[in-house]
Image (cartoon, rainbow, N blue to C red; front, side, top):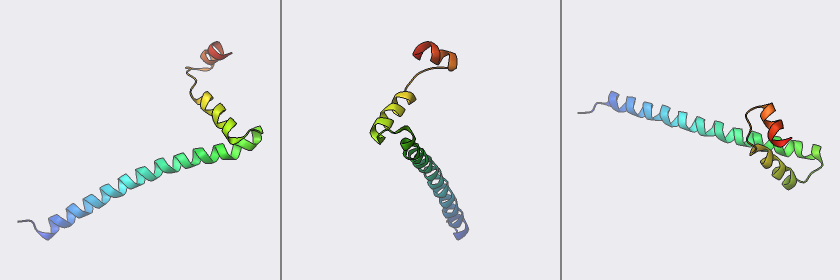
Length: 76
């Protein structure tokens, strides 16, 4: 037979687990929002449209290099 204390512990444990998962998802979402906000804020500095800047930023993020010397060797 299951007593009330066992049920209470199980519910509390489930609540803590759900809260931890929710917090992790919120942190990931907040990181995406901050990255997007950064792009939106610095785009006018380059006098580019948001689409042009997004294309350039995407190109830069997809470059493959190990360090500065490797970057200079591959991409000038």
